[in-house]
Every structure is written in structure tokens, then in C-alpha cells.
Image (cartoon, rainbow, N blue to C red; front, side, top):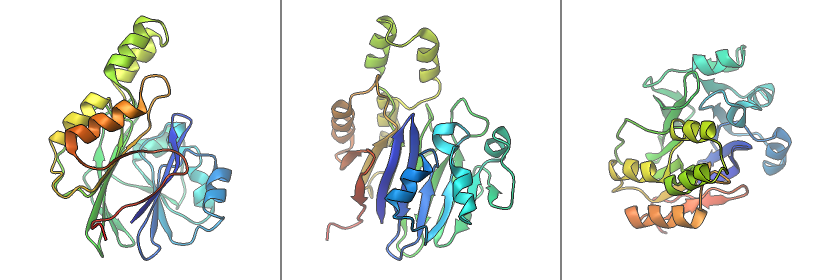
Length: 247
């Protein structure tokens, strides 16, 4: 399985996962569609669908562009309603109701964010059994997952850095309060990782880092120290080979 990062920030989030037989999924659609077209060489063959976490523009803005290419968009009813998205390409899904797209088995789960009906996704590829979790824009995940192989997780801010920025006026109190109640901190990411079954995990990819309230080196090192699992920061242009076995 391969992971391609098309965007990973408050300016736009979009990821591509590709299985060995060219089956692909898009995770979120918040990156300028012209960039997506260029990165994919205008080749949308094999894209089975687009999974959208919630209605904020850095995750949903260009979903309609994919629909125009005949690609189905999957999100919660609350997400579609907030942006008035209707049509046969917009498929409503519900938390904890499993469904399949091609050879991908997908289990949506509810997350904690200031959005109408946000979701995260547990994705399993049937031919190989590989499992990937994608969770972003959430300050907490109440579920436990077994035998995860790859984790694409928001790691938006470091509590110490954010607190200092609020104290020094770099961010205002309103933004600071929202941050604590809508995004995944480094500290909570580590708690989540320690509470889950990582015995089969091969890669952890940290995404959606704040420009002002994070430190990439600290986050990468802290997560690796806590898990001893290969940890990577999601940056636009990153192409990562996700392997169950090192050969």
C-alpha cells in the first residue's frame, strides 16, 4: 500500500492511499483541485471514492470537483447538510455502520470536533488484510482498535507551546480554547497510541500540524519514543511505501 500526501494543514488536507492493484481512495478533499490534478497527472483511474471527515473547507472544499469526474463522495448526513451538497454522487454514511468500496472495507467512527457530524475511518484492504486508521480534527477518540498496521493521525499542537503562545498573545484566548476542544494534541495522541493494539503497527504518520503551535521534530521524536514505531510527518509531496514486511 502507498500513501501520497497532497496537503496536510489548515490550508487544505488531502491524502491518497493506493493498493497494489491500483485501487485508490482519497481521504478528504480540501486541497486546490488543480494541484490534485497535477499530482495525479490528470489520471483518476482506479479512484474508488472520496472519504470526507467533516464539512470544514480545508477538508471538503473540492469534493464537488471529484464528483464531476464520476467519483462518489462519502460523508455523514450532517457534513453534506452543512454545505448543501446533494446529488447521486454524495453518499451518506453513518458512524459504526461498515460498508465497502471496491476491495476496501470501511468502518466510520464518530470523532470530537466543532463540526456537525465528524467522522474518522478504519480502512481495511481485503486482499491483504492491511488496516489503516485515519483520524483528524478531533481532540479525543473513545474507541480502541485491534491489529492496526498504519496510522494517519492528526497531531495538531503541543500543549506547552500552545499555552505559551496564548500567554504571549501569539494566539488569542478564543482560538486557544477552540484548539483544546477541537484538535488532537501531541499528548493525547500518545495516550491514544498507548491505549491501542500496536503489535502489528508498521507506520505512524502525523498530519495536520499547526503552523504556530507545533514542533515537527519534537512531535516525531516523542511519538517514536513512546511507540518505537517508524514515525513520519505528513508533508505535501510525501510518498510513503507502507509495508507489512520489510522485504
